[in-house]
Amino acid sequence: MSTLQLSAPSSFNPNIGSLFLFSELLPTCFRQEHTAHASERSLLPLNEPTKLPVKGKETAACFREVSSCVYSPSASVMKITRQKHAKKNMGFYKYNFGFREPFQVLLDGTFCQAALRNKIQIREQLPGYLAGATQLCTTRCVLKELECLGKQLYGAKLIAQRFQLRNCSHLKNPVSGSDCLLSLVEDGNPHHYFIATQDQHLATKIKKRPGIPLLFIIQNTMVLDKPSAKSLASIQATHINQLIPEHHKQTITFLKKKKGLVKTSEPKRRKRKRAAGPNPLSCLKKKRKSEESQQSSTSKKKGKRKRSKRKSDTMTVAVQDMKA
Image 1: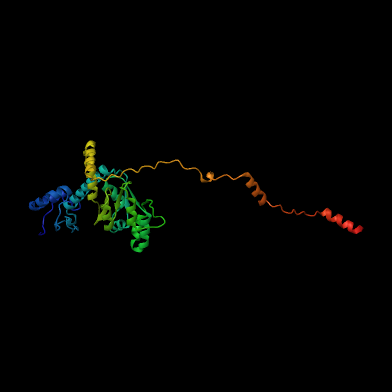
Image 2: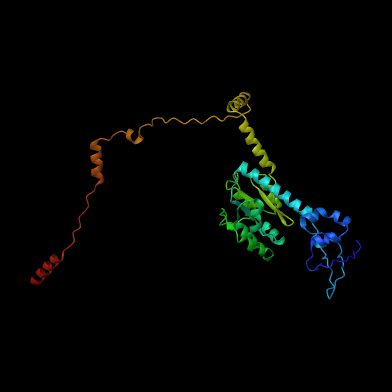
């Protein structure tokens, strides 16, 4: 676009930069192209500065170059759609799996490292994205893993140390961070944890279990993944079971048993306790008393009794010897 040479009115102050005066001086063809964006931003972008003759020592241009402030509607639209998807996914987990505030988020070292690289403030940005209070958590195994990896992940370790610690069963024998997080969401994720990770291997394992929300970072934004196929299938199965009446369920199970499709395991019968026999020692024949007395007399042998000489006896014997 060629540089426009325009004359400013006598009452024009170049330091004010009024949009009204700018729009009056600009050509109509240029205004029509940017009217929609200018109404929202209150700013008309120019590719090149327009020069106006001014009096005195002020030789600067009257119009500022605002090419860096060009309104880009795609960024705001993407942000709105991202928030809509997050709200929809959060509604799914709240309604179907009972997630409530404060949301507990388990983070591993890969997520902390990605947040550090992309300059993301997890503690400040995550509650706004999830539209609710959050509790950021980690485990001792994750901290131990970051400590073993050395200086390359020292920043991620400092970030993870600020979070709350959740107790795991690997206190004496630490495991990898991914295995530790998987152990905390076993048995249907009873504590309603979110998993924040950049590890693809861990993410695939998480998706195979229903009711576990997954968070990750793309470029410089945090994203809540859509519900996995396993979660959708489990919810669909529960809804189908709720729609079928109870008597229909009984007839279905009866027909399956009749055709042999269901293997019914018969309950084990308890063994009946029978009366125990007499004590075998009490059944022995009794011995006669004469035999018992003879055996007792023979067993007991009389032994000679040893008498100890007293001191008085020795003294009397010595006196008698002296008299003799």
